[in-house]
Length: 48
Image (cartoon, rainbow, N blue to C red; front, side, top):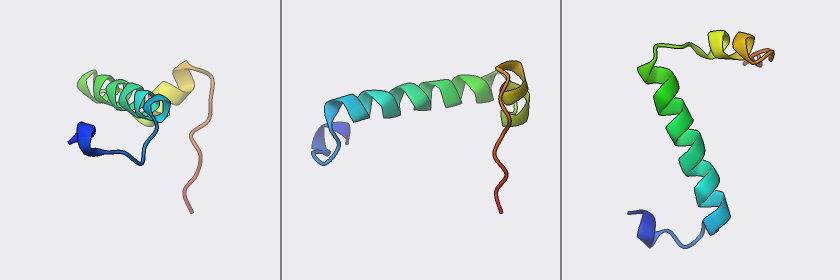
């Protein structure tokens, strides 16, 4: 499917793939977004 996408630039696709990998690893390790944010010194944004 990825090869059919032409509207996404290669550098943008690299960023998307990297973020997807990080997300998958966070889930596999059982780390919540809140826990990860605390570990890296950030606050998780509030959704309203």
